[in-house]
Image (cartoon, rainbow, N blue to C red; front, side, top):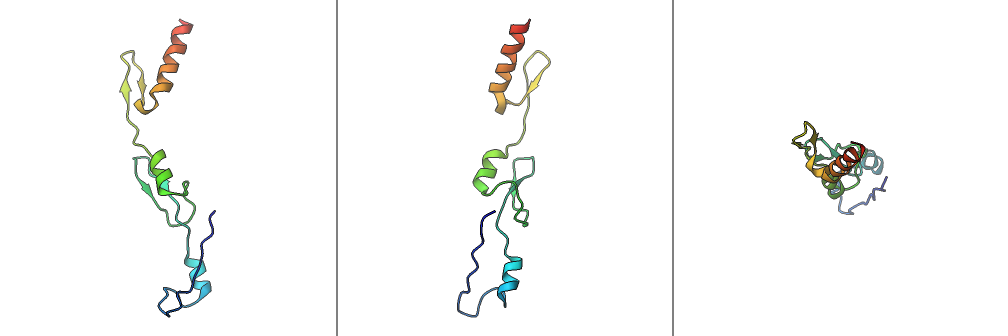
Length: 92
């Protein structure tokens, strides 16, 4: 987990009145995917992804196509589908 740097702004206008209060409330941003293509920060520092960009790259909405043979596949994984079809045709 990344370190959180705690600084005193030196103005008396910081959000917390003590260092310990700040440290106990200061959480490193992290990200989770909701399975519908959306990333969110759970607010715990325990999200699966350390950056929003990485989460967005890995968090895609599943969608499905039919291949005309009674099989469904995710077009985002089309290379896996092609490899599977080639393997099956070699068996037949």
